[in-house]
Image 1 (cartoon, helix red, strand yellow):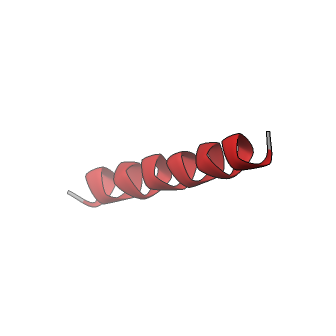
Image 2: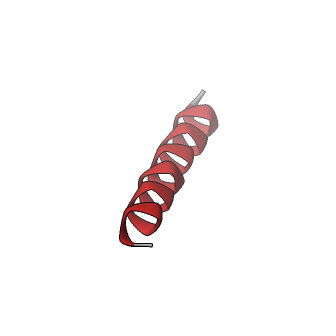
Image 3: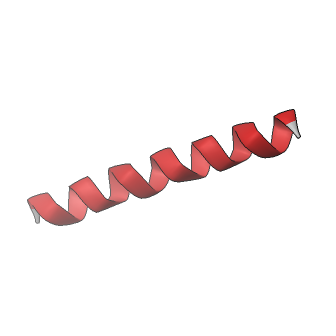
Length: 25
């Protein structure tokens, strides 16, 4: 279950980064 939490954290981080890039672009 620890791995699943880690993956969810990484996915949420990627989504935030994409949102920021789209906002800047």
